[in-house]
Image (cartoon, rainbow, N blue to C red; front, top):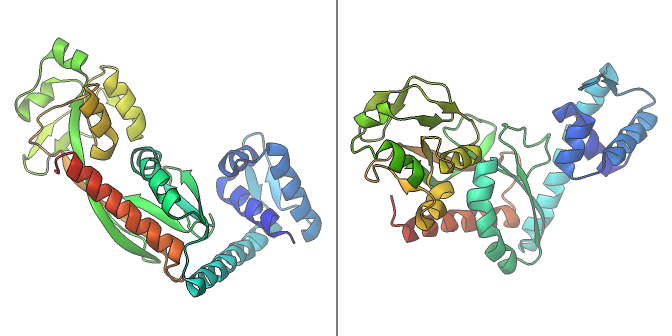
Length: 295
């Protein structure tokens, strides 16, 4: 049984689709289909049932998937043990993060990190869905918000502030709010459908968002286009504020402060490549915030 085929099958089971798996792994759809066919030939049974949109595991597929997850975890453990023995950061580092955090934080810190650790290859999976680290064959996940994963070890990273931002054109047309209360009269862009905005140190206001977009990167594009005022992660909007493409509204007000954690499975020791990546990420976040004037 080929390890690469096992890895492909585990992703098919997780993502419930051939096309989705091909996109996630950066492979041609035909390669994913052939890997599944080889797995089914070895198993001597169909592993999935296909519909026009999704695939569903057969009984044989469910049984094999459980073993596949354990196989992937065991191989990851072996890699980690060897890395720990050598003590030198090396090998492929599989990192999962939200799209916005990947674009706003991880991508900018990667050039310096890769220059310093020449034997590490980083595979960044930018996916807003919460994942099973073992099933996804992932070394490290970055989570935004409160922690609830008891089976994972978490290291706290510098927190993220949400900044109120709008485009110069929007503020020229609609006026600039001078108090938190005045925000209620403006068009607001939010990540969820809710009835109030709460602030770290300024209470709350009743709101009815005009635009609701869960992805922060998409929110930023809409706000830059003049759709309204959004409360966006500081790491994502700092460059736009510095360049003048966005204006920070009520700059003395923090919309919220959000926890950020780096997580890895508790059954694995902390490998050299994971340790140095977390250290570099934390330092990058601290330096970036400091250069921007802190909170």
